[in-house]
Image (tube, rainbow, N blue to C red):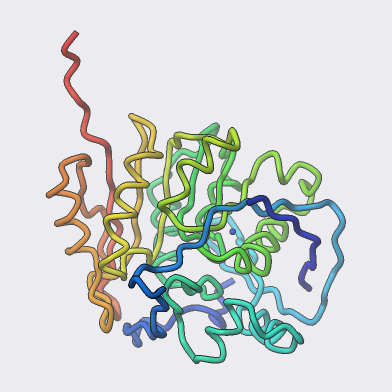
Length: 304
């Protein structure tokens, strides 16, 4: 089964159907579209709000992934793609990526319908190490299916903000996945979760303008450092939104063939900037090498 919802926006088992194959590390990226000045068209931030009314759509398979005793449910990505493909509207960002046979259309669609393997690495790491989420404010950046954020929600987070570049991804994948995992909490879902679309560079001001949590205790992000040009933007939004005692967990491949990014390059950037401590807290050597990075803000001396 799957949910179909009405949305409004202001200007998120071990079945592997949608999991990115670790034996195919290259990322397929469509051409970046720029304006006449060579600048990218950035998507402004907006919020996707969930209304209580919902219907059950049995045409989409619900898969699940077990982490310890926690079962995370999610819509099968291939079924979601097929449903989108069957619609009359052919102008959306996701349909453009599907038509281009691409994992990514840079600055249009950032792969949010896939269950990327590093997001599963991150969930298992959080489970294995017993990271405490109770009463914490949590942000997942580049959430896509939203499984790490949903894990935090199921483990007592006070609130979770799920951010993805593409509003369609939040509507078609993230929100239904949150509701699949919160069947008894639909009426309060807007109270515990916020769903924000748009470019990272516009996120901080949007959160402040709309009185959404401006600082987070834990920030989670998976497979978001594949692009060299986006790494400084990610660094800056992490610096802006992490609470002084907070922690960032970054799950990613050591190198992304075809696009150039990876954990070593991001680690070098973070050390060069000097705002965070950063260390590798978990390595995965099966298939393509992957890591979990842990970041903390450098504490400034009190000169009073």
